[in-house]
Amino acid sequence: MKLWRRRERDARAKEGAAPAAETVTRLLGRCQICEREQKLTTTEPHLLVLHGYKRPGWGEVVGSCFGVGAQPYEVAFDRLVEYLPVLHNHGAMLQKLIGRLSQKIESLKGFDFPSDEYSERYKLEMDLEATNNQLWHLGKDIARVENRISNWKPSRIRSFEEIAADVRAKKESSAAERYAARSAKEEKIAATKAKQADLAARRHAIVESFRSQFIELAQRGDVVSAHKLYNEMMKKKYSFFNSYPRELGIDSVLEQLGLATPSAYGGYNYRRYV
Ligand SMILES: [Zn+2]
Image 1 (tube, rainbow, N blue to C red):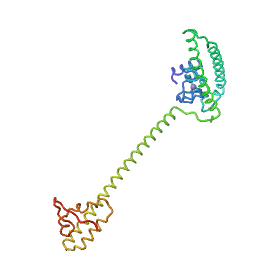
Image 2 (tube, rainbow, N blue to C red):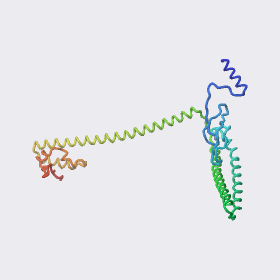
Image 3 (cartoon, rainbow, N blue to C red):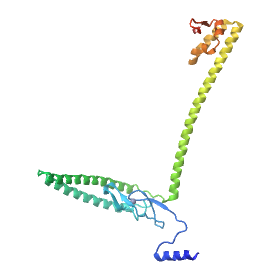
Image 4 (spheres, rainbow, N blue to C red):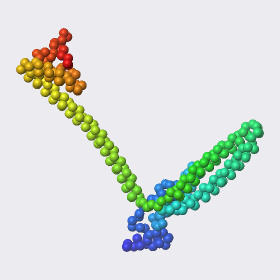
């Protein structure tokens, strides 16, 4: 060991401080009282370090939290048990104050003196309202503390690293979820596109098939078969067959087979489906 290190260690020992650890495990624990995650002392038993306290029942930040110096909620609830009478005492104090304020307000009623009396009573009424409000919040806090005591279950104190890893894992899993959702959406769009393309290809194949059959029948002069085929084509339950004869693009062939007649306005009229 280097001399300065030894000196440092000896100095620390003299001061009563713990020797500097080679690796410091940083621990976090949830405060029994304020429920926030706070740093813990490194040596056993791990205790909550100094932190502030803010609860509506007490108004503003009240110095240090009652949970400072206690073990975290993961391993103990003793400080909550000690805290209950403190809250009840505070409640009794508030109730006394409410009684005094109410009495005073009552005693001022009926004295319809000008503004002075009125403003004093007004001020007292405001105080009364604020105190009642505090008492209400205090009741909520007492219920919360009782709940925490009866629902307490031991758990493990975790390190900064573990908590950070947890946060990271949560972030990663939500990113994975978002990615999966996006891929699913893209897949759905692609499937719809594929379906549309498939439909168009089938339609094209059917059109091609009918066209070549009509041309062949016209070449053979088989009008009877052509009319049968025409009816068969028009019976097809696809909506696109409504414009089918035009879609075939063989008007003169259809005319030759007696299935189309030139219209007076140019173009062709097609035979009705029978
Ligand atoms: Zn606290």
